[in-house]
Image (cartoon, rainbow, N blue to C red; front, top):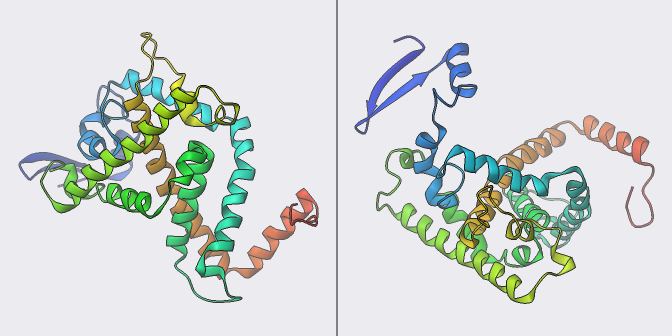
Length: 269
């Protein structure tokens, strides 16, 4: 059929683009030619929530991206370093995987846990981090199971994983909404002014509408999901690569010493 062809899948036309030109068209296509909302909304909306990302006009998505950029500025990222460091050190201290002088572990699972802990603490605040209990982990897992290929075509099918996905989304949204409501009751607190929830609570769309609490909750769910997948996969690959190349690991350590100086009494560089 060549590099571009269409076939019928579950009653819907599905077009495949392969090769350099096909990838160029899909990955760098113009908004008038390719519609990300039409493709991704059925998959992402039940997980992320309504009225954001692919469940809203592209112009609104662009505004939401600007709101989120607050937590990704240079100064904000610099302030995240001690938070991330503490989360990693706490994990190494408390995880059963690191109690002995040697052993075996599932590095993919470990990096996934570390990533969600650091992402929650750095981007979402202490309240959210404190709620990363067994219940929250189960909710995240059930939400994540919503990203299955069948949901591109049948996102609302009454399948077991979709029922769990919907229940998890409703519960997680209520957790965030409760945090937002409590903050409004408590008033502004300096300790909260650097996190994403506080930022979104004070954001306004161009039409003058303040970001609704429901949308804030949905954005926080999206941040947690989006910030975890690629980061945990990349970090797991890095750790596996370093484990297979001890020489490179030592070179990286020496590079840190050369640029940051020797470690202090507390282990800091």
